[in-house]
Length: 98
Length: 334
Image (cartoon, rainbow over all chains, first blue to last red):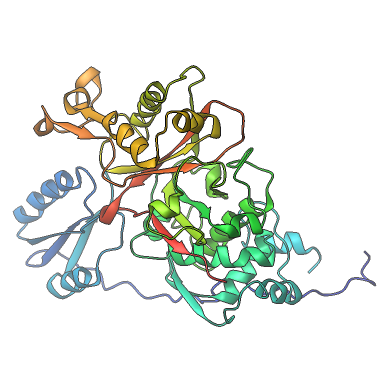
């Protein structure tokens, strides 16, 4: 088919047509001193080992540590858990995998 | 656009294979395959939890190469995987190479020309291949589940392109998978199971049901890993020649499942962490226990395959139950 005989074909969109929105990161902390840091264990094996060690370091630096865990690593964190972390912690560290 | 096929690759609409251009005419024809309204929202599609309408499913079914009469099966598949129990979000995101495995029961399978016989799990049948593919394209295009993004599979699997087949009901000595899962005979049902690619269990020698059931159990004990018990399910696809051993012995589905279960008990001591110099395994506190390889209901048995061949197929699963994925059966409605 040459340019002269080409016809335009309209294709229907198979996607959700959603436009990604972007959000700015929360302001970064200058220091962790006096803050409450949440440690979120996604419940993968040995995530607790990593977070125990991290928690020890943070406590020695005067940080208040709060521990959280997801019911299962295969599903997103439940809304209530995310809310609890957001309202009680100044920062959060998530242990992603084993 | 200079080339439709190239344009669709560039837009990221494909699974790596060419797709059929979803023109308005084709999509309208596809929608003739269902009585449901195009604007009906049938699911929130993971991982983005995007609203998925009948029309969006139809567009993706066109892309995949479906015929309109397949659409009800694709719609049921989308609804079944987009449930909290099935946990499609986790199945996309996991590093393990698993995906939805679809088994169709009921008269619709024959009516739309699905394959339950020779090469049922392989290539060559349009309905099998395009229904499974359409589901994956919905997850990709509507849900946003793309490899390298939310899909983090280490190896993936050819089965993630499409893994869909029908049960050979007419040739089976047993009640169907759908009946086993509580549906009335003759109901059109799709069962979705989170599984890896199939592997074959060879037993060309067993002539008695007792020998063959032990042999199949031995194969099943290594599903996913010999060191994994209870936590992951499996599907066993029994071939007609293997099934004939059980028919000849007068074993119905219940007898077969009971016999199989007795041979699927595992001595925990043999798979404790550190045994045979392998660090993977059960913690020490399981010592002395005898455990089932699969939880109750964690082994799905289907009858399918060509008339010749003393093989069955095992499809290993993924984390089961509330911790992972629950096999889900869904009635197919027109």
